Length: 276
Length: 264
Image 1 (cartoon, helix red, strand yellow):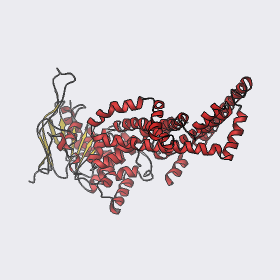
Image 2 (tube, rainbow over the protein chains, first blue to last red):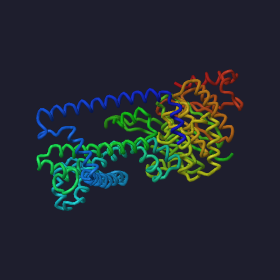
Image 3 (cartoon, helix red, strand yellow):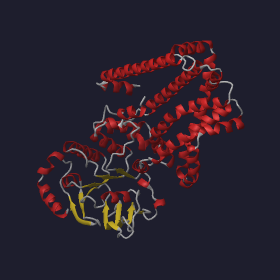
């Protein structure tokens, strides 16, 4: 990691940046407490029956995590989301590379892809339950199909954004077709792929929860459904809070992987891209 | 006398008009010249004279619409885009106008790139690359990414990337065009020094008359499009040359005037 250390030494604005980040954190925390305050007021005026109180949700969250009940259901949803994410994203990343030499095939499957991208995935959930049962398979399938189309189009855009000048340079320098794909096209497409992954990550968790809402006996979606049937808004809010936590973990992982893989980008770019 | 290393004979290139009724635009027509082994040839011409197009055809990354290019008496398949062999199997290197460094590779990785894809990455090659990096003053910047380098440093990296794998012929397309005068002089100096180490054949395109005289053994002058050769000037200023003092040389101003008169 000599490279990184080196760069930090050169970076004279490091302290200033740290300070800016601390200010941003302070503002984030402030916003969080204002929202919780509004929530508390709503809960007090409308009654805990309609809007579970923040404190109630927090205690339920902590006891649920410690007692294992919430933890088990959350990890179930987490596994569905991750398995579906990988199952959908990996072929979606590689398909545009395989199709690169086959513009005809790409054109032929394009309407199918656009249709798949546009189709409401919620409507597919009952179908997948019919096909794959109410177990984990139907949820993974729904997540995978949701993630696949999002990532496919961003990877395709990355392959198409190829700089032909770089390819010519590589060919003159003796690079084979395979070398060009590996050293020029793939690294060039990585920023685009990450844009897709970052968009797809929350969808994968949302997809898993929605699939559980339709029919399941485990998972956070099931807890939401259970809470609704028992008129237990605090239970619903607790399940939603757990969902948000998973989204945070997922986002953080994608951002961390991106920062690592895209170290070569100018920092301004990373800041714009990474957003959160 | 041995056959020239590179022969260009009646080369022609046209671009289609913007609309269907437009006449096709001939950028190059009836262009002929040859390059001897070990010669430093500079080509000068007004902008838009098809200089880049000419180099692209020699490097086989573009097709021609007539004429022929022979390298080592071997005819280039310039009428069939599928048969093109960019770089002629690493025998012709090409330093383009833009540096075309790979943004995801560090300086060192960029310079090593051709050797890596040619499967020639051994200890001797690495040693040579290290020598080149130090020779052009990039020492200490081996692990920086291109966006962390200045324009001149990127140019140097792009130059030694081609020198590193040692192709017998190197084409250079206004490599120092976009640089400030100070950096340009420094790079011209570096180039001449490196060229003196192992005299390879260089075809150097520029629009700067002073640069063409300072670097070349011979200068060709191109006309406006459709480009053809309208002047040829052997440059007999003895080597090694001092770029900073070359303007004081008695032959310089005469050559400059004569070339100036031909470049429209």
